[in-house]
Length: 178
Image (cartoon, rainbow, N blue to C red):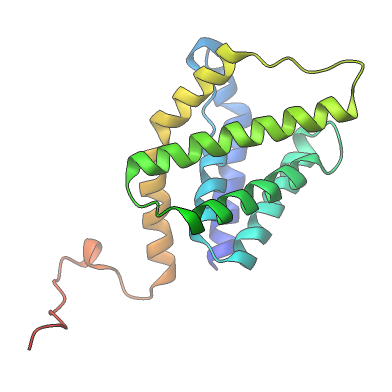
């Protein structure tokens, strides 16, 4: 149920991202809530469900936006491994750390994408445009914290049968009290 809900949310975000958000002016940047969902899934889900979900999103991106077959699944699985490795080294709980994780992941993904496209099409290399990347990084920094909170609430709601204290308003008794 958890994977199905996040998959449905990801498909909705993908549709929103490829239709409505494309109407925004380029100087405002392109919102990428699906990428934030990918980072959230790689960070919060267990290895097999998280890798499966990220692979599904990579396949969807590859089907609709991919120029080279299999590039997005490879990049997203590499991103998943990178975030899993990074989360074992660093404790990431606070919003500034989450913003930093998303920004580092975005730069890592762009770098891997740039390398693969350079290898696959050496006669017409892609351009690394810093203005576009910096605007995209700023937009990701702005939307990361609210989206992480929203995805976290969805995750908590789906993982536990009973509502957590945030929703029920009841206080749990202190289990450490003598």
